[in-house]
Image (cartoon, rainbow, N blue to C red):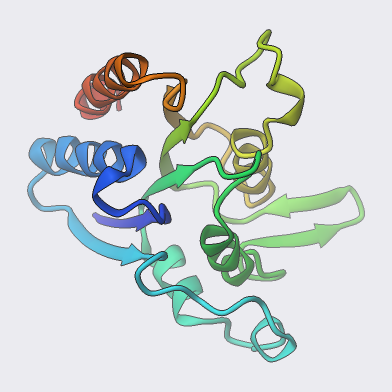
Length: 189
C-alpha cells in the first residue's frame, strides 16, 4: 500500500497541521508497517502556479503520477484567509486533470479517483464550523470536500483543530484533541 503525505503549512515547527498530519501517518504506519510513504512538503518546495504548459501536458505531471499511484492521501492544510494555502492549491491544479482524475459526461463530471482513502489535518485560528458566526467564510474544508468529491473521493476524514488563535490554552486543548483523534484513525479505518 502506498501513502502520499502532503504538508502545506508555512508555519514550520509551529504548525498544528504538520503535527496532526504526522500523527495520522504514524497511526496508519503503526497499524500497517508495510505502507510505503512518500512525503512532499509543499511549503519548503513550492510548486509554481499553474501555467498553460502544465495544464496542457498530455501525460500530466509527477504530482499527478504520485497521486494516482497512492492508495492513501494525508493532507496537512491550515486555513489562511478563509481558504487553503496557495501551495496546496498549486498541487491540486496538477492533479485535477480531465481524463485522468475526472471526466466530463452528458450527466455531468464523473470522478475517477474514488478508490483512495483521504485524511485531512485541518487547523483554523477561529471557529468556522457549522452554526458558528464565521461559518459563511469557511472555504478550506468546504473547498477540499468539493475538490475531493469532484474526483470521486466522497468520504474524506477530517481531523480538525480550531480556535488556535484565540489563546494559548485554547490552542493547546484543540491541538491535543486533534492529535488524540489522529492517533486513532487506523482503528477507525
